[in-house]
Amino acid sequence: MPMKSYREAIRDALSLEMSRDESIVLIGEDLRGAHGCKNPQNLEAFGGPLGVTKGLSSEFGENRVIDTPISESAIIGMATGAAVTGLRPVAEMMFMDFFGVCYDGLYNQAAKFRYMFGGKAQVPLVVRGMIGAGFSAAAQHSQSPYNIFASTPGLKIVVPSTPYDAKGLLIQSIRDNDPVIFCEHKMLYDIKGDVPDESYSIPLGQACYTREGSDITIIALSAMVHLANKVADKLATDGISVEVVDPRTVSPLDEDGILESVISTGRVVIVDESSARCGFAHDIAGLIASKAFYALKAPIVMITPPHTPVPFSPVLEKLWVPDIQRIEKAVRELMEA
Image (tube, rainbow, N blue to C red; front, side):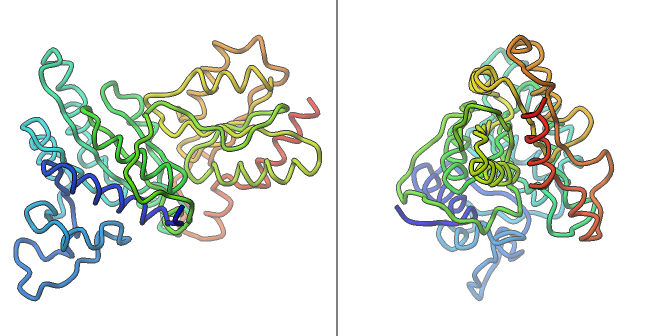
């Protein structure tokens, strides 16, 4: 099986789906290198801020890879309208931090059309956005606000952690008839993994056990999964058997997959980069407390960033993001509880 980066896996998914279905279009800033409608020199577009869609404008042309002005609300309005009238747009918003500008279009419009029209309207829309700290990109380009949108009925939230998952989940998201927010951690774009060349899909709402264990469960998303895996591998040498659960999608959420692991081990650490208040970790903790409290051998532990904006300083940012040391310390303390 070929090795591909997270970035390449996403590009693969887009290319395969656009080749399969002519109704799929890409919409966003700089997708065609800001050439707009005209490109007389036939210059290759960079493909977004981190080059994810590079090559697609040459492959599919200006009618299917569409540059937009710097207006997030216009992008979402355009994409939502295209979706309800027969196309399958994939809108790139660059950073998920910018979603606030078009919040009404997602929260009040795209998310609600199917329900408001009695199931007669479909909104097959994918909105891609980068999440995560680690680039010293400061408070307005480093957040992971998927928890905000996960609370909205009608939106599906996908947060892949590996190249394999990124490709399979994006293909499934594009084929879905409801709006999907696809969250790409910017620190994962260069990681590599086994990814088939052919098309495949991964069902939304299906968790993945990235490590199997019997003593304690770590639940983590996106980049945090890789930290959890490293902790599990390290503690295995000390005789501590750690199970790592990657939900992969926040909404729909694989409650059964999460609860099965927690009930089996009786101890749980939840690692999340979204928010220290009303975040994904708190949602999972509430689920476990309400449905698996009887199985717990120790209190639920949540590891999140502090309730502050993301610092610009590399030193402070490193302290802000959950790390291997904090996760390992929490696991060892729970094993002694």
